[in-house]
Image (cartoon, protein in one colour):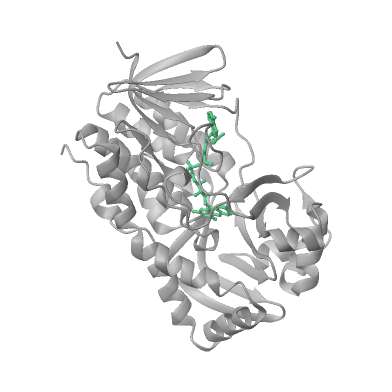
Length: 373
Ligand SMILES: Cc1cc2nc3c(=O)[nH]c(=O)nc-3n(C[C@H](O)[C@H](O)[C@H](O)COP(=O)(O)OP(=O)(O)OC[C@H]3O[C@@H](n4cnc5c(N)ncnc54)[C@H](O)[C@@H]3O)c2cc1C
């Protein structure tokens, strides 16, 4: 006999959305989350309108959690800059706050939260799934693989060569003003960095370095930020004399940008969030995809759809979004295309507004209509 109807392995956005939606529909669900409490998580902390819409369906309001409002996208490379209006009002909210709030909502709805324990094995069988955590094991009729940027042993993803970092700083008044209502992206040889104001008067700085840049600049994060500051005075001004809120950044390696999990783990194991697909981070749509896929997987379980059908449907839904995201991502790779893309955006800001629309997850409105209503 299964102990649970469903288990989410990982209590990030995808796992919590999955468990919360199932619990709302009367399922006995559990979330296994390895961290004992909130932790700095690699993410630019930008929430698109779609992410906010999904969160509101799940019972959370970004503004009520202290999110800042972001309506402008500013791009720079070297000393070239361009500004465009976003096609929606975005929000700046740290994952420290957001992930805990969503996990709390899942618990309120009736999901059991098993906290501070890492799942060490996922063993699917014909009519159940067993998840092991050290000395314990849990059985369920189905599971969501929602471990995000971290792979479960035995269920790998493609390996990318990018490393990502995130740190928060307490800004000077001038920096807070310069970022007011803005998400700032700066591209450089080997990656890009994003910055925005978030709750609690903090600024989130999140950057990526590819393998070549890591060799050139070295592994030390302060060397990365010096390299980025030298490349662009926009970031140099934000980082000058910065007061960081932690001793070191959170980091994650081998990010497989563009990855889509097409292979099936088992008919009753639903990969969600970054375990299902990984969109280039500059789009700021990974959280929408995590929430949308967690929700869609829960709907699949409620509607007796197998993981195979769910994966095919969801990956079909994001096909065009990934196409545009990867096309724009390619322009960050050389100095000429970086300069051309910022130049094009400077000459024609609506182009950037259009790209921002093309790289959003589609179908959020239908997803946020309760299927049982
Ligand atoms: C550099 C960078 C910047 C980004 N910036 C943005 C942005 O600004 N806006 C945006 O929308 N998206 C952004 N993203 C994407 C976004 O962060 C991810 O798509 C999103 O976090 C995926 O959510 P998830 O729930 O799949 O995984 P995660 O948020 O990574 O959650 C996974 C959870 O699983 C837990 N876990 C892992 N292994 C185990 C285990 N074995 N047992 C139990 N628990 C486990 C982890 O502790 C974690 O809590 C960015 C990504 C990167 C790399």
